[in-house]
Image (cartoon, rainbow over all chains, first blue to last red; front, side, top):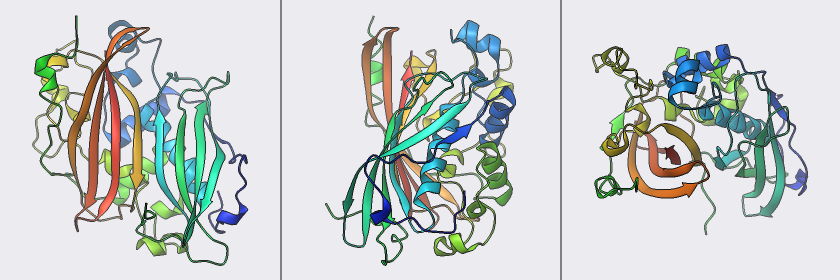
Length: 160
Length: 174
């Protein structure tokens, strides 16, 4: 993603889709690399007999902790260098298994202007190759006004 | 048989001490992390125009949540439980500074989701500390049987006690 140009609040249209972010196909090697990077050795991500026989899972699971990184990447890249990802929430509703390719999506659900910056509400999720949703969520992003200053850093939430 | 016993209810509201991550934000650790999440953004690598307002290179947004690792000299659960067929590989490392939920330590653990608020990035070289509490534990009947939903709230701060992020996690135990 080119991070050069800021995105402005005024340019966001309700209903518009964020560019889809695709990750995968996710192999056991991807999952092992992620487990090593965060030093988390939960066996359900690399020990297939343990996952199936002990935890009664259908196979090796893509880490929820990895899927949430993809959501943050989608949002961070979309708000650009002058904006800020303020709030994100998501639920791990369904499992994603090794071998799947994930599509991380977002859509502008609402927006409201404020003094200094505007807030954009996003609906988001992660679908696999069969279109099954696994990780529905929402986010609140802060974007600068056109002709205004960057969103304050550190981020200062709007006064209630 | 209720999973949410009186012994388990005693954990609700329990707060951790402040825990300091064993290492500061290291460039090599950030590189491996960014490569593993497949987001090699220049923000994370070195000084660049887009991280000037953050004070230089930063770690990926969720990096502070993964900095609480086994310190030099701390007991090694992988070796200690090498002959334990029940060991899931995690031990108590998923509890964000909180004590393990002993009454349900035999139950499998799944990540249910999170609500996160971001205020600052962690910069290269910064230390990170956390404080957590068991905000709630509830039992729900699901199509797969009874499950426990454990909610943990955690605040992450840097060495100057500046708030980086707040996380509210739901862990599913079944």
